[in-house]
Length: 252
Image (cartoon, rainbow, N blue to C red; front, side):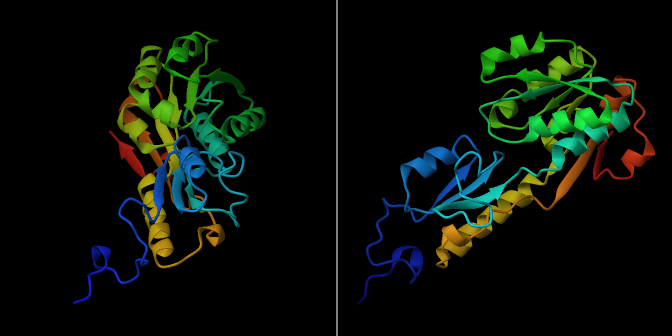
């Protein structure tokens, strides 16, 4: 009687071993480089908020060219859109601090600077590379609002950042919905759950024989605008109907 193939699938190779993964899923731009450096043969499916090209994960979005592919959460228009939404919601704001990690390779700080120049907003860099840097960043300048560039470091310190903004009575703008659920004023960014589901689709295609080198890296196509009206009220802000009409989810 022939021996059954692993997990009941006839597509597994004859030399398959439980100790050798058929693929690696890397969640986060700080994790994906370790997976890439660990192997150049096992397919790596990433879901990251870094720029995959600038960080060296792939040669290009259209032609990854190696064993890494997947999805990125960044989109070139998002940073400017967040600053514009902040300006519409709080028109008097003229100084905005951008809380970001320079080691997290993405274009959002530079794009926020460019958007600030067009909107008449002074954009201040608040650099944080580790947990010990937050106090120094908090004491730098006197921003009238804070924009957070998403990364694992920022997510791990979400409560700390949210409490800092609340204590100083200034709006907090972010890229992902959970920040608004925790008290930030607004978020505008990709639907993270949808992006991770698309990454799962890459796993399926690779298991069916697709070459990761030829699977284009996807950028987000679904975006969510969330606003916390309770926070807006605490800040003395009246969110205009022009913004509310575009909002996907309102917390009251």
